[in-house]
Image (tube, rainbow, N blue to C red; front, side):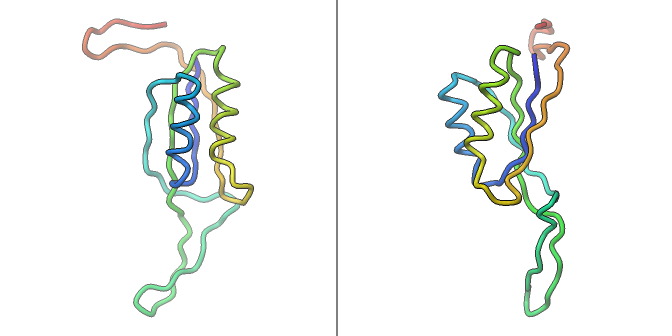
Length: 109
């Protein structure tokens, strides 16, 4: 199994959810995060005072999938999240050794 972590624009989460639904991928975790890459941030004005916003709001989407679905899920996330501009985000893939059901204590491999 693999854990896919995608850091994306906040307005793209619903598009990603719809793309994953089409692949019959159930279950995802979404977390509000802040950060920057090449986008670097921007200057904003609040109450007449200018300040630098260096950490931009993003969303982290996490999905655990079997290895046979990995490529199609990654491509679905990329397709749904892409705008073609700097700041679209990143997708990370990590191994998952196993998982446990909290209610029963059973282990899935």
